[in-house]
Image 1 (cartoon, rainbow, N blue to C red):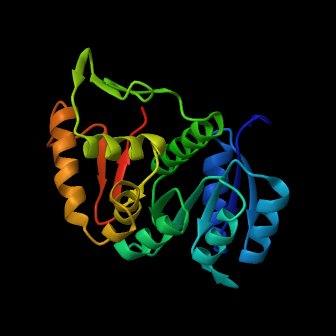
Image 2 (image 1 turned 90 degrees about the horizontal axis):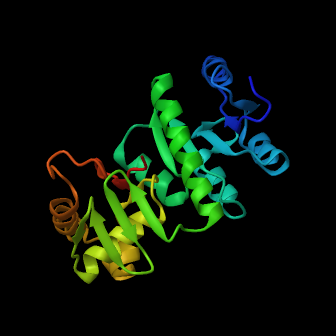
Length: 231
């Protein structure tokens, strides 16, 4: 294990899950610190400045959503929720509270590692400030020039399509809920109008994806929202 690996704070009260995660992450070069309660987790998040937080929602002294909300008040450290609560409303609540991603138990090591890599890349982009040109595979968004390309071909977007795309670009890699995107693009009075998103996401996919029925870039999180995939 490298001393320079990213530091993961796990806030989880289940001993078997802690053992599994410690073995999985340390074998892939991550440093690791544990907390078993919300109170201890908050103290560790404050004192250890982890690179990413894995947070269970069912803690013995409080709900993980409340802890995520408290942590998000003072740090942008990525929070990946791990929970047995698999309903869409649970995922939406966690993401709206400030979590960056959500994994439903049980999950495999490879999926966990992939979500951690995405969370860390998103955090690195945010810390460096938005790159003026976003690139993912054959998609290129030149933010200062307000120009979008797929391969060598420029794609012309409507103002609303472009606003939706840039909302996803600014948080590339992160799941954005329907409410977050509706608020960012159409304003706070539109947060219930999810049909706006469906219409414009379909239009964007037809313009930006090689196969709109199997999107590589603009990915759906069913019942939750959308994610612009980092490559």
